[in-house]
View 1: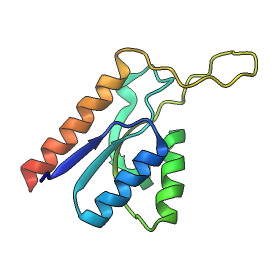
View 2: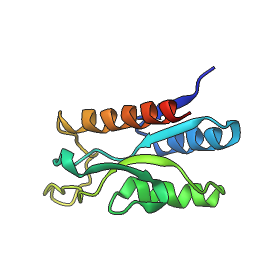
View 3: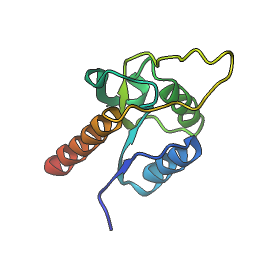
View 4: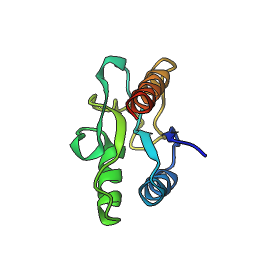
Length: 119
C-alpha cells in the first residue's frame, strides 16, 4: 500500500487516469505540469490545479478533470510563459533544459513530505 504518488508522467491521458484513480481510491497525488520550454526555475510553485495560470498543460488538465467531476488536484507548475522557438511554422515537441525538470521534482517531493508529516 502507499500513501502518496508523485506524477511526473508526460502524457495527458496517463495524468488524467492517475487523477481519476486518486479521486476514486483516496490516495494523495501531486502532479507535475509542463516543464518544457521553460528556463526560469524560480517561477515554479505548488498550487491547486484550479488556481493555476499560464501553463498550457494545466489548462488542458483543468478542462479534462472538470469534465470528470474532479474539483481539486495539487500540482507543481510554472508561471513562466513557455519559450517559442522559430521553427518556420513547424510545431516541435517541448524541449527541457537540464536544470528545470529536477526543480519540479524537488517541489513534488517536498509537497509529499509535507503531506506525510501533517498526516
